[in-house]
Length: 160
Image (cartoon, rainbow, N blue to C red):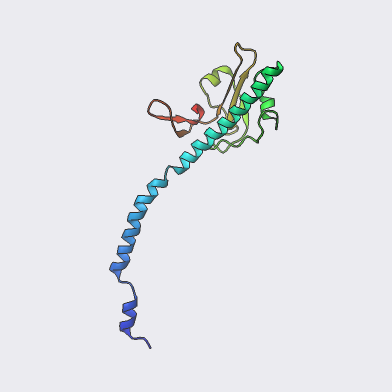
């Protein structure tokens, strides 16, 4: 049989419990801020990687097209047809969660205008008749990223 004295010696006192809670609180206060920006950094990195892959595929297409004497940049149809330009399915824009590429005009591409952000994740402008021919591919979102804008601030997704 247990005596009352044995039960008390095995239990934690209120002071011990408070000390543990305070230590856990201090550790949480130090650790949590370290992970707050991780999601934003992941979105930025994902967008940069996706843009780099798409732009690289367009550049590769351009090299082959110039050698073959074809129009240097792919049309939107060629860009969105599996295996013609992109060797992978175009992922969704990490800032909006929306996939799909839409065509934009020259002035929209120059200013990196965001249009239909709930319908399309990416914007593409191409003009093979211009001198020189031009193509612009960018994210269809104005969400702020963790990438520097070069002027001490942060770039938006459409500026990447």
